[in-house]
Length: 310
Length: 280
Image (cartoon, rainbow over all chains, first blue to last red; front, side):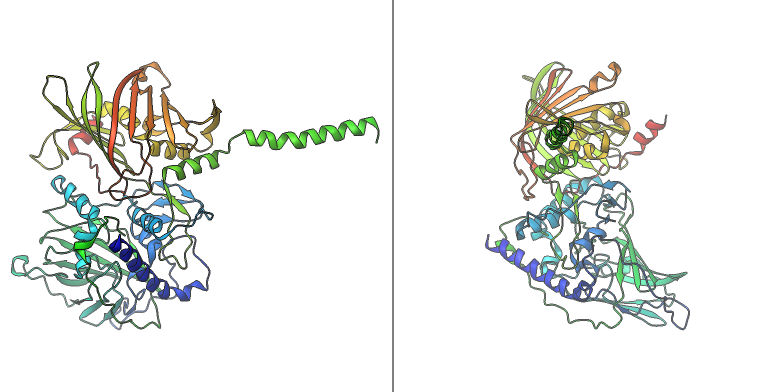
């Protein structure tokens, strides 16, 4: 149980960091819904007329801000204290008041988190020969998740960058390294918007972030990437492996102080059909500075004694 | 105080004493359903990363997978059966894989799948989805029977009782709490009667169709020996013994070895030929 306790402790530490990021919002009182933040303000534009994405977005990326947001990322929208639905299918999800006379201990909270983060219906459809492997990956995520070996999250698992700098001919994305249980290495991407074409796939050495080019489709920034290695999973949970022929199209839209992101994954070797993430929304933090990356500590995989995971 | 006033006071007092008593005897539907959902471990909320968030709980049961063995009915005989089920409630789907070995006979392997109103048999897992990889045989007429197996599982019962809303009636029979409610969608016209034990766990589920033409939907399933049977523990209680009867005859008697409830990756895409068959 030694390592199990360490996992819980590390998770708790990660959550404290996330809690600190949100501390300023605590003054507004607790949220009882997990709906994305409503946009406010106007959308600034650069000199060439495009929406300006420059800024710090949620500070540590959208995935670290606690299970409530991860639940939304997974597609479960809790709209009030009596209404919830699965965004992908539209199916109602039964809502219950919290049981205030039965506080959860760490273990129960971890188990609840693992279930909550997986209850949405928006799942990529793999070819049947890979169904068992995906299930195995998620079931054995403590050992199998590339993040647990301090690898970069990759694309599109990195999701919304914590910082975007926008220039006339390129955009620059920064994904700080995340400590704690969802441990990933710092990652950055420099993406041209100058109209260049992709390098032919066969000429690219596979990499964690692949080769990305971007263009504007109206006010939407479309980032098209290929040329990946097969060392990453393409969503935060689920064990969603991929091959070197994966092609990812990310779409970024800005509305006031919010940024909405989706990614569509195509992988003719592994998937039966393209899969699109549930839209994720990050909030601009106008005066925030990007914190230093947190060191990634590799897991002592040989001594894991439980399959329980986040 | 005159006699008239005294009688009025006595009647009022009697009424005041009687009303709470009557209320105590009528089970509170919401409370009973919540207790049943809690007993099964279906209700979870987040206490992690929620420093500024107090979300209510939600029903987190979606996909499940169970493995067991026992006997099943084959032409009127109970034969040795290895039983493997993958299921989901969003979308409503179930894949039942059985290997049945009659005494002195060869093992027979079947995969029976349903999703919403589509039903098909698979010659191998995921048959019919990739050209040249197995055969998916449309069996859409079997959709109701297969869906009934999904909705008569303990989790399906609690979900369906919630979906039925005011149509769910809670009563007491022989000291046990009983839920009675109609199913909807493809199973409209089928009434479910579910019996809860003292721990509010579903122990017996009876279904009654609205007409004789659907006699195959008259079933009785019992569940016992509840525990958390997942390799990755979830605090979800799952039955260890399932006995299903159809038309009074036992069609399934299974001891469950493992029941994964961590919403495992289980998908049920409908093969195109099954969709086409449904529209013909």
